[in-house]
Amino acid sequence: MTFIIYMKGNRWLLRLLKPLLWRGWGGLGVFGTGLVFFLALPLSAQTSFVWQAGVQAFFDNEEYARSAVQSPQTMAGVHLAPQVGVSWQGRHRIFAGVDALKEFGTDRIIDRADLMAYYEFESSAFYFRMGAFPRRDVLDRYPRMFFQDSIAYFRPVMTGIFWEYHRPRGYVNVWLDWTGRQSDTRRETFFMGWSARYQYRVFYAQYFGYMYHFARSKHPVVPEHLHDNGLLLLSAGVDFARLARFDKLELNAGWSAGLERDRDGGTGAWHVPQGFLSELKVEWRGIGLFNTYYRGGAQQRFYPQYGSALYWGDTFYRTREYNRTDLYVQFFRSPVVDVRLTASFHLAERHLYHSQSLTASFHLDNFSKHDGPPFRPFWEGWFGKN
Image 1 (cartoon, one colour):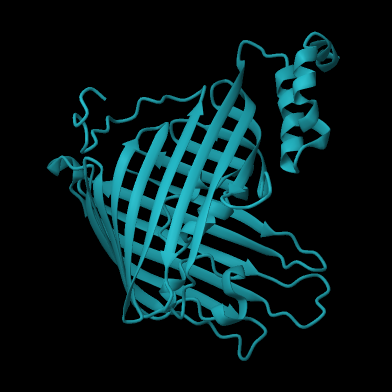
Image 2 (cartoon, helix red, strand yellow):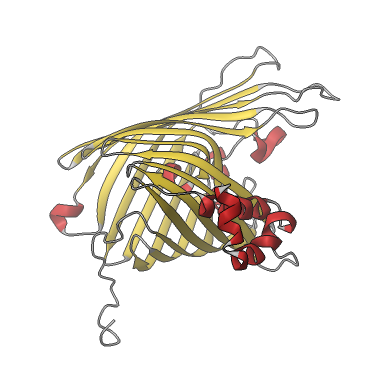
């Protein structure tokens, strides 16, 4: 009844949203329906209407013409991710929205639309999400060995659960991402992951891990093998950014191990490629360097058979030695706007490859603070008052 009365009194809103409600593009139609539902909810003193607006543009040009483990490609597009919801007691929120991707150069208006609908709880110590929610908000700490850059570009939404306990010195979290519902033509696939970090003064230790379950479809026409693909990284480091008055100044090193097996092929034995991984991060007034070095066993043993369906990490880790150096310029950085230009150099397979990327993101909402630490770019004052 509340919904009917509200819409009769706001016929302009109904006319505006009607194309999205029933004739929208995939998830946009669902989003339009959800928007009207939230606008029609009666709000109590402890309940409020909340919204988020996000835009993320990317241009990533990868020059790997002579590589046997990577393919040269250019990835470019823009994401539009509006969300609306309800918040109560300042800690509970329900959101509905859509992440719409437009790739540069295509004829379609929207190339992909992913529905977002989730419950969120946030307090001083705990953070919890369940449903379909943005991946970048919860898994952006993972190294590229686990998730390569294209995952953020083309799989922006994860469907599952995320829980984290955090304090000033660190955090611990666990998560589930269900990536494939079993059908006659589709395998059942899902991730189970966990990560943690603890910092004491300038020293810290961190841990990342996941297990990817790659099962069979319901009624495969040809025999399918069931795979388990695990990966973990344990490292320790030092962070001198505050002491040296840098934006970033840290070095870490650690041990990584893959845990891979084909349950139905051969003996079903575990393959455990191990290696050494180190990271160096230096940034001053928006000019930065991020270097990653790996040496050890070749990861992704079954990549020739299954490719990116089984492995989501950077395929340069299929080699026994790999060094990546990112030189970047951070033009803007705040809780709302982030713009970065990066030139990357990849040393692998006894060759030097290069890639370039430009990313720009905007995120705004009406329920969180947007006054993060001040950012003073290197170009401040070049053109008078900024």
